[in-house]
Image (cartoon, rainbow, N blue to C red; front, top):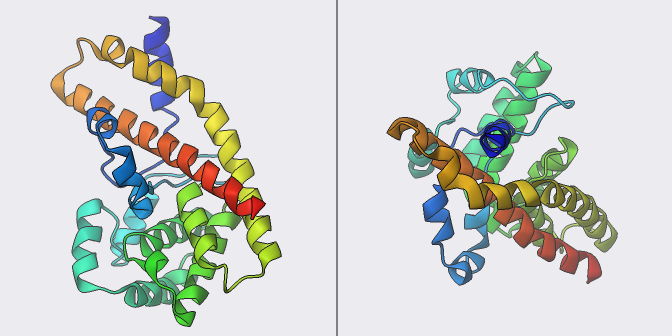
Length: 238
């Protein structure tokens, strides 16, 4: 009973996500060397708390009403039709239309993450792209989410754009946040991995599938943070 309660408690701590996370069993079978060879594929999606409070899932509906791709299938479709420049224009066109602080916060977080990763901005290195990578990376830093992978790949790409001192400052801020999150989640993740089968025994198939997805998301996010924690440390020490 104790571990069932622990399991359910940590499920409740997962940050809001509009994407389908990888299942626990799928995540465990991923080849580590392949993942390290494609760092952008390690990045996970999350909306952090705002001022210490979780944001409302309903806020994402407001974004969708403005023509912004929100669900995974919407994003996949948009990737075939729009460039990162078009998504950037969508950001600029809608930014001042949000009067509510929480809506603007979710808008910033959502667009910054999907433009950087899903629309491939992080893979660009021309001057215009570097300017927008800097813009969206600073948004994620300002909003105080962990986002270890997005921010590491962003500042690493900006070595020729930002000063060495700024790179180290932002790497240190992200390292500290990531270290705190890794430390906070290390024991719960270990317990969940060990107890998952026992804690979900007897769940109806639909609930079991949901639990696998949620736990898969938690494990993938933890793996991302552990991986990029080392990368951030190396960046600081350069």
